[in-house]
Each structure stands twice: as structure tokens, then as C-alpha cells.
Image (cartoon, rainbow, N blue to C red):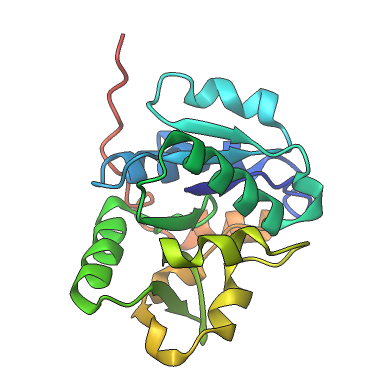
Amino acid sequence: MILAAGASRRMGRPKQLLPLGETTLLEHAVDAALNSTAWPVIVVLGAQAAEIRPLLARRPVLMAENPTWSEGMASSLRAGLTLMNAFSIRVDAVLFALCDQPAFSADLVQRFIATQQATQRSVVAARYSGNLGAPALFTRPHFAALSALVGDEGARKLIAQLPAGEVEAIDLPELAHDLDTPEDYANYRGVSAQPAPAPAPFKATP
């Protein structure tokens, strides 16, 4: 589930549409998910949904529109989980990812899935900058608690409340580089000798 409903106020323009190599920041995240074994891929839109939706029209994703996106991250989790449960009540886990981490890739998605299967932990979370955060994989027993979050509370709050034995951490320092401000974007483009690790573009059907 790609969370992309924010207004990008600090960026000053929709960061979902920022050029990243030959694609955009949001397309990069979506294609990474599509090139993994995760299914279905859900994208949660909110602010600028009308502008962003056509970008994904030819990709096989489910788009959840969050009309209360200004409430904060919790409302996007609820919108995405509502659509997911409408699609299938048999989905046993969800990986929540952000659209503003250029290092996000299909290989990382597979690593989360493999780690959960190997450890049988109910939550697998990325660890960077000394914290646990997104991407984070939650198994179904946590869906109700995720849906009960309010305001700008993301999954990080729930992770902090869980016993350590339920959470497996994956050290991913490269994910600390997210793009929230024009300075972040300029610095990323300046220090990155190569384009973001681009997934193979997903081939849309005619």
C-alpha cells in the first residue's frame, strides 16, 4: 500500500509528481511494488488526486481516495484498509510504504515478505536514523488497531506500543533519505551520482 495522499506543503508542489530519473517519485514507488510479488497494490490519494490519478491510469493498481486526507496519516491508513478489505478479506498482511523514499525498491518489498515468513513476527519494520518506521509490514491481527488510529498518527505509534517480540527490524539506512522539502530534493539530485534505483517500468496493457 503506497501512501500518497499528502499535500506536500513543505515541498511547495506535489512531490508525488517530482521527476526522478525517467519517471516520477510516485511512479517509482508504484512500479517497485508492482515488480514484487505483493498483490494487490493499493495507492492512497488525497490532495491533488485529480492531477495524480491519470498518472496511474494504465497501471494495475487499486486507487483509494481519502477525502479526509487533511486529518493526517491515520485517515490514509483507514482509507487504504477499507478498500483492501472490500477487494479481499483473505489478504493476510499489508506492507505500508511512502511515496517519497527514492531507495524504495521491489527487492526491499521481497525482503520484508521473506523476513516475515522466516521469523513469523507479526510486524516487520524498517530501521533507520535510530527509529522504526515505514516501510512496515503488518499482519492481519493488527488491521483493526491500524484502522483505529486517528489524526496524524501513523503506524509508528502502533509499533512503539507492541512488545519487542512481535516486531522484527530490518536495518535500511538508505531509506532515511526522504524528500520533504525543496532542499531535500536538490540535495538528493546533487549527491546522487546515479538515478534512483529504478525498477523496470511496469508494462501497461494496451
